[in-house]
Length: 71
Image 1 (cartoon, helix red, strand yellow):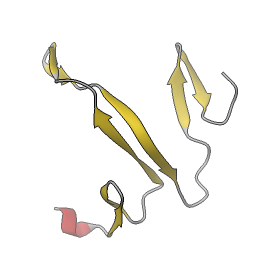
Image 2: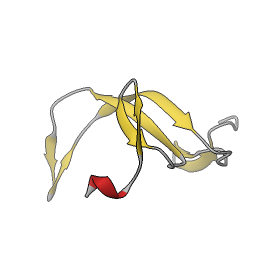
Image 3: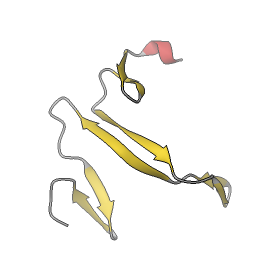
Image 4: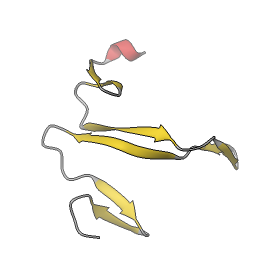
């Protein structure tokens, strides 16, 4: 399945070569049940936005915001 795309190496492992960006996270605890799914908590430690992508969209305090906008 993964042979369908081109990959490049980063300090955090392989990432899609043609993707608009990627992020790296470390786990901050054990997964816990949440309904029919598992809740996994982590801390984002690296982000890369590529190829002239628009500013990333975030969700903070109940509102969508652009990453470069003041909150």
